[in-house]
Image (cartoon, rainbow over all chains, first blue to last red; front, side, top):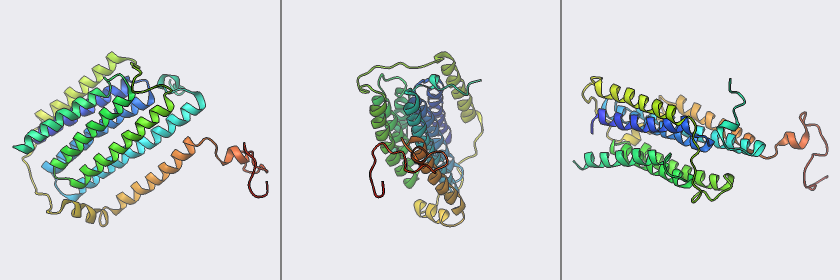
Length: 100
Length: 187
């Protein structure tokens, strides 16, 4: 286990999440892609903390990332609920009002 | 040695179950695959000696994925464990972007001459985190707390079926309130 291997795992998680966030049509699946990207960030931040800067400030950064995941998920669910209630849709392609 | 083997096992599980999220053919399975990925990442964080963060990641994400599975049963209008789905758009470009991002990040991880390991973590990592949060980094947690409180309010306002504006009008002056079921004191 080295910093390189930890970062490689983080890169793989981030890339899989990026694929999901870009390709999925269902709002909830897009959110899952974003979660996976943040999952990769958690691994990378934990690796940097352990190998380069093992002081408590790094752990605070990790807490902030986890809080960002929570906020993203809560607001995503709320927006998806509102979208479903108003239009009966759950696909991003049907909510492209701000597109271009 | 055991740490190294465990790290690789968790890494493979995290990445494969993460990929399975977009490969399995039902949303319920996708949410549990994501939960498995988060558990593997949480265990990796535990291997990196951040006990509090690792446990919080596992507990929070398992609950979140359970909520997500329930949510999909509620809104998708189908049996999410059985209904196959393949709802993607622009798959080729997304795949190219993901592969490109991985190559770029992996090149950075491998080619950059990272310094050798430096510093040692404090003896009580969780205690040190608590003292940091209650001391010099209190502003960070105060801001995060305010953001989460605002998220709760915004989430409820967005998701609520009826708000006070539906009951009392845009200027909140309509009396009596427009309720589907009249009742209560004075109505």
